[in-house]
Image (cartoon, rainbow, N blue to C red; front, side, top):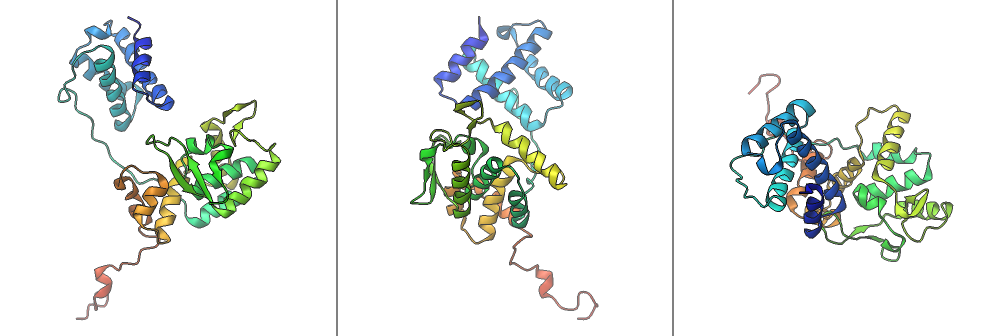
Amino acid sequence: MDYIKKFKKMISLRNLSEHTMISYMTYLKTYLEYLDIIQKSPSQASVSDMQDYLSWLKNTRHLSDRTINAALSQVRFFTIYVLGKPWDCHAIPTRKFDTYLPFVPSQSEVQEFISTIPDLRIKTMVAVMYSSGLRISEVCCLRYEDIERSRMRIHIAHGKNRSDRYAMMSAHALELLTKYWFAYGRPTGYLFPKINDPERPVDTFYLSRHIHSHEERLGWPRRLTCHSFRHAYGTHLYENGTDLCTIKALMGHKSLNSTMIYVHLSVGSNITAKSPMDLMEGIVDGKN
């Protein structure tokens, strides 16, 4: 059986995104490589073999528990949809993993970072990403017709949750975008196309690479990712008094739980509540 071919077909039938397909294919190939090592065909693989595969990933690839859970979900997809075998969710439990709050630059740090980017194209992409809270893939795939100047909004087609939404358009970002548009040949398809192929959007790693380069140029430690600016947008909105439901809609979150992270990220920067200890007297000097 051509497992790769059938796997691609099943992914296509489920209408999963191209990004998901690439991710699934990566882990499937790794799984098939492991089965070759232990000299078993996929149809012969037992639950014990799958458990050993996940341990092998942990010990040899040094993957995080979150990533191993992703690999497990793809083995499950392969077993059910390609091999046509049942799956016992209790036989291979998902791994628990620690969660960490992401680094979020302050508003002054964002201002310094964007204002000092020397390349107009990169500066515009980062400005649009931060000012509208876009994902990196959404920035790269923006098209000319997505910018609604009269309503100061951006149409995001087929976002992460497979639904359209409108993001706000910053006046400063629009000014930069207009300047970029005239300087880079007035693109009417993708706003940020590949240099050598204007019919295709620029790759996401292009922007990531330039963000890290600018960190080095500023002498900053490497802490920023493209998603840092999306987190900064949500956090700064909350710090400036925007309610969570509005932030949820602007960012295209499926659940309010995803938006709640900005409550935690904003604590300490614009908190108005007082510690109950600060309402007590005589703590420091020992007086009642």
